[in-house]
Amino acid sequence: MKLIKTAIAMAALLTASVGALAGTSVANAIPAGNVLLSDDSAERWIDVNNNGLLDIGDKLRGIVTINQSGSAPATLIGGNTAYNELTAIFQTVVTAMTPAGSGRFDYTFAADPAFAAEFASKGATAGTVGLFFEDSANDFRRANCGAGGTAGTYADCEATATGGTLWASFGLSGGFWTAAGAAGVPSAGASLPLTTPLGQFSIGMNFITNNTGFTWNKVKCVDLTTFAISVVDFCGQGSIIASGRDIGDSTGPYEIFDDVNFTANRVPEPASIALVGLALLGLGATARRSKKQ
View 1 (cartoon, helix red, strand yellow):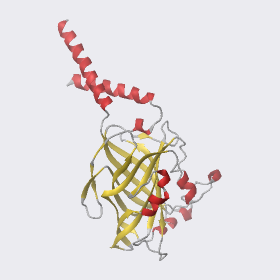
View 2 (cartoon, one colour; view 1 turned 135 degrees about the vertical axis):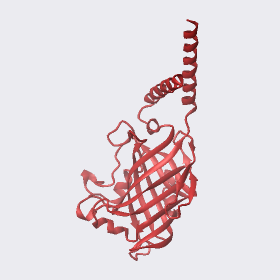
View 3 (cartoon, rainbow, N blue to C red; view 1 turned 120 degrees about the horizontal axis):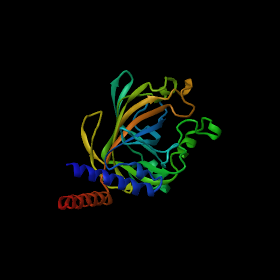
């Protein structure tokens, strides 16, 4: 057992050395096995029928940055770290809603064809609900998006999330996107104190394009509205919270912020497995020499 533990430690050191040579790629910050990715994000409500209620046919569009990978301790990504930033833009359309009391609703969302058309040049195809980008600019903002740190517009903020190269695109085929007990008037988040809870959401999504450099195992994901379990590539669960925009808690266009964690399971690279094997062989040879002596 001691030899095995030592071999694993040696392999980890070797893997870290190989990763260090690769520079600041996000890939170097994502461990093999179970992965927890934490974010900062923001959403805006597109009231298609202009009736003041988030209902069927309305859209939610948002931006995301993954700022942590792993846990205990987490590896920080983007911003002022040594790693590139991993950012995303998404858009969904409401396909179903059920009253949940006190002006709250349970929602079901789908991919919006208009989003795929708008971002076709960035790699979106039919069914795309979100695009993730790896970018060395490290310029993501969900507030203070304008020139000189001014509040800026949605377009200003989105520009900080859509630079770089396509890391992955995701769709909802075989998965889901739902919200439980969510505020029927998301714009209320502008005038509520920062982090006021406005509902929960859950996302089960699958790769359309995988440029991550890794293979991923499927993970189980719970739909918080039905408690049904789906098996997907990436599972996201989190909270919808107020931005407090109108009372000075944020200086940007968004009325809603999100706090979400994505879970996934990265398959170890063959090189890493080979390093473990080499380490075991080396320890075996050392043990045999010790016995002969």
